[in-house]
Amino acid sequence: MIRVQDQADDPIVIEVGEGFPQPPSTSYRLDPAEALPVSLKRILLEQIDRAYWQLTVPHDHRDVAVHDARKCLKKTRAVLRLIRDEMDPEVYRRENIFCRDAARELSALRSSAVMAETLHALVERYRAELAPEEIEPVRAGLMAMHEHAWRELVDDGDVLTQLAAGVAQDRLRIQNLLLEVEDFSMLRRGLKRSYRRGYRSMQAAYADPSTENFHQWRKRVKYLRYQMRVLRPLWEGPMQSLCGELDALSDLLGREHDLAELYGVLVANPHIFHQESQINHLDLLITWYRFALQVEARALGLRIYAESPKAFVKRLSGYWEALQAQKTDKG
Image (tube, rainbow, N blue to C red; front, side, top):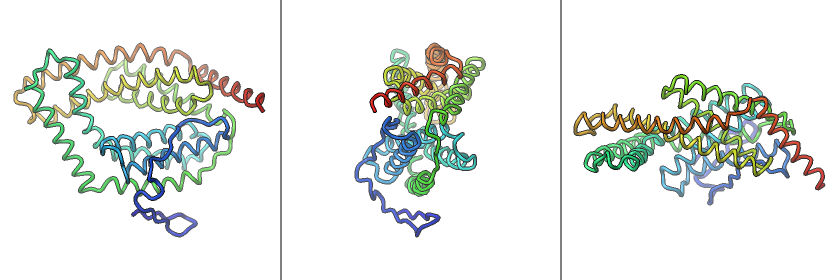
């Protein structure tokens, strides 16, 4: 049971799963039939509802539920970043921090869950280089660490229930969010900022290919990726193509990041190896794989960030104007 105190009303008591026998709908895209503020608030509330559902009554596998809840919080944050210039600065700061911190609470569970999958991908790529007897103890050790993280944070720490309470409170705040501007100017500055920061992060990553720089670029790509999904209805064909490219780039950078995290976990837990040579061997293969992913990501990134931020926003603004003209003609 979660008790939420609204400022104007009596406490709202939410039973676990109440109102959500099925997963809430999450279209995560504008509806041209809706006013822009209405669409954006609907998208925010859908993501919050989905996160709450996964944290309270997950019908998915527990790791899938955690991943989905975390993704919903990141999608919410991407929309907030898109409209931040139309929000009161303090309101934006509060909501952005909440989504950031809530997602971080789940990051240890997500990271430990994906380590075994990342090791499997490494083995698949370098099957001739890795003997099964060399890898099995490592895989078993990674799975044991994930079980430990789950017991510590969920079974003992009750982190999911605590986060669900915070998400329920956040829903009340989002519901009261005032968005008034109804044209593309509402989005222009947020889009320009996202695109510019992504381009600069790409430049920084290849000027100094550190783990942190590639991680920063990955985060910028994901924000733009989610924002483009919201804006797909502006012009379905070109926007779908851009979304596909951003999905592919996000996947490449995600795998690169997971490999970097895997190496960090292996170095921090040498007890899961029989010999020191094993970690050196895996280090070499991880380095090769990461470099290959970085090379592939660069070519795709240069295509996605080929425009200036100003030209990129102008193009999307043209899509918006064409869509409004089409609606007027039909009316």
